[in-house]
Length: 134
Image (cartoon, rainbow, N blue to C red; front, top):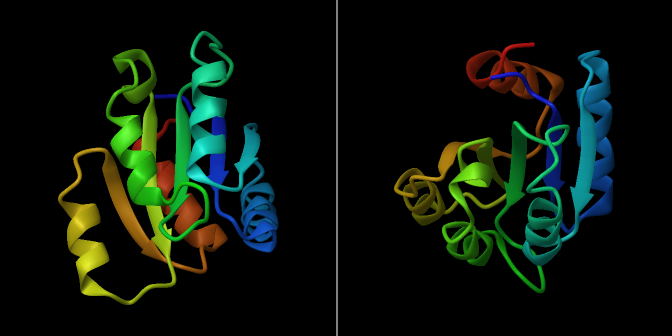
């Protein structure tokens, strides 16, 4: 699967900015989108559903956000069309050290990985090498 975009979903704008810097360091040709909550992320996915330049997509999804948190996003994500879901890899990110979050994420079929924040260029690189052809 060739990666075309990365969607950073985190209510902390500085985290989204830092993650963008890590992605730029990898020197890959992808578009980076940012959403401050799950609702914004769903809007971006739905608006891009027919855009072949958007998919395949890597999504980093924070758990704790206002308006719509990561868990609520995943509930709505389940209802999206297979044409979107089959072209997205979701990675949950959190500062939480609660084992319940890890277990819940691991048991969700749409979540492929679970990472403690902060992310790094090494973490992004390992994700890209595991799931995408660059």
